[in-house]
Length: 257
Image (tube, rainbow, N blue to C red; front, side, top):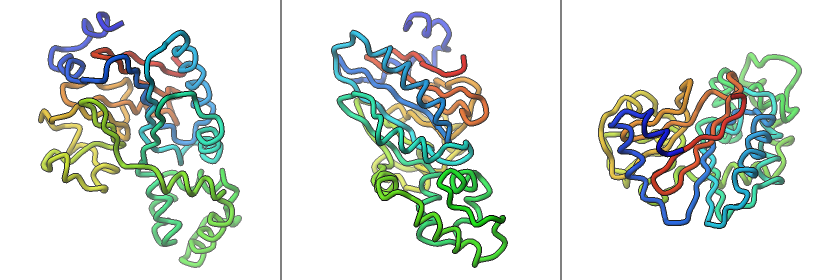
């Protein structure tokens, strides 16, 4: 598979694969943005389990965040991640900007004005935390916040609160959105790790680590010389992507293709 991939990639992108520097006998599965599509998550998990058959090395499974919003099954996604985990040596659930938005709303109802507009309403419906009308006032937002606080299982809240912002393995940095190209990796800010877009994706800088991220949707996985993007817009496209990293190789498992 690696030889096929190398023929398809431009020279500049091939260099990313040569820089992964993953531990020997270690396979990494990295899942892009799920966004409330539990059906796709279950299907992708089946593919990963099949891909694992016969493999005897160490394994990591890294989710890049954005489990919630937009799709209709956010609560079911978290349930699946908590109660039907895949057998791996290491499982990392990173935080996405949509998880952060929900946590912010639980702390301050006014934060929900923006969140409801980019997927939060679907999450409220998933947790049966609606008030029977579209919110039009601060009181409505507070009522929604209270309903969500009551409806959200404690295990789900603990899961969201414990999600880290990044994970480093070999010479790869796994993060939801990306990094601020103008700051060293050791000085990155949470806001950029969760939200940055063009300021990161358009950068030609070569960093000390290859950045593996979601957040910015592309029709196909993006393999560039400095980053690898795995968000293929699952909530709309039906294509949920998992990158499979091993030594200097990269291949993809995907739903709907």
